[in-house]
Length: 422
Ligand code: RNT
Ligand code: ZN
Image 1: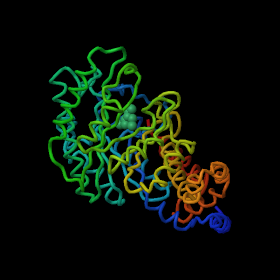
Image 2 (image 1 turned 30 degrees about the horizontal axis):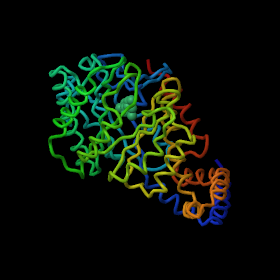
Image 3 (image 1 turned 45 degrees about the vertical axis):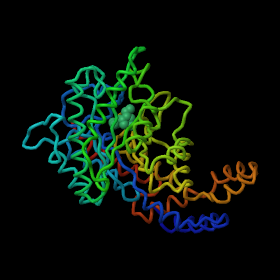
Image 4 (image 1 turned 30 degrees about the vertical axis):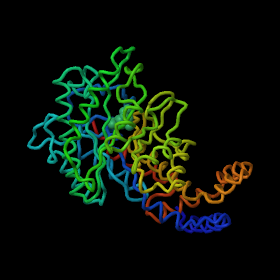
């Protein structure tokens, strides 16, 4: 890496952006304050440490068998450390309940989980000054084999999953208290029908009642926030998903919960970037699962595509940085898993960097005056502005590899560590 060249390129870029009234220094100082929640499940194909079932179920699928998957919590944390060392900025960890670590060698049932099972994770995060977010795991479990959890017609199954949800809320609240950083707990359930149901109403009423029970306990909003994640369809739930967008939008508004928008959970022609400014009229905060659906909710690694930029632009334009929690949700086992984290997270940050460099006030003025010609012309010219030089400088000053240099480090890690895993 040639630091001098990067600094020189940055100072030219700074001048170029200044012509449009954009201050690159302040854009970068803002960028450094935006945490992205890194999902632990990219590191082991959503496996977790219970080893009770091989099938994820619930219509989510991780394909590929690239060697080197993390098999233990220590391996997963080491992989995360490697990824984090290649990503600029301070970020968060997003943990799923199935990543509980046994205490005294005993695997604990999900309805009995306690903070102690996540103590190592929280200590790990704390010593890195990272916040943690949390998720109950309503899939990959014998009690979810029927395809239904909180909406199940079976009272015993519902009871089990309500208990899991309650256990997780207590854990989440404690995580937030310990780390002095609000833990956002996201609930996604797989419940749905492959074929046309006749009692949508019954299933949705049961889901509502189960959620009411699960959320009955009051929690401290400084420590813990609840979010609910909708979905349009999944593999095996093509005809009806019980927790649909309308269902959770209504539930969240009525019960003061956060909504979680997953980029892969809508009709393929619908985009979540368009939903942010609607939803934030009615909610204080919003959770995103930034993902990349390819023809279906495929959870591909996030890349710097139009929708990723649009998401970042909407957050920045709306001044929503404090109100939107950015979480990632992708899993690809066909490529090096550490590289997948690095690519996806760096792209999310790149998109935010791009958005912070937009001369939005000027574009908004053109738009309000009806000068759509200038708006389109400018939006296109901005795409070839020296954004890359600003991004490189951000990496340089954040002490992480610039450009493709991170890849050599991942290759080295693969050779020395990942390839030695059985
Ligand atoms: C599934 C949802 C959910 C999961 C994670 C593992 O379609 O997107 O968020 O991907 O909880
Ligand atoms: Zn998701």
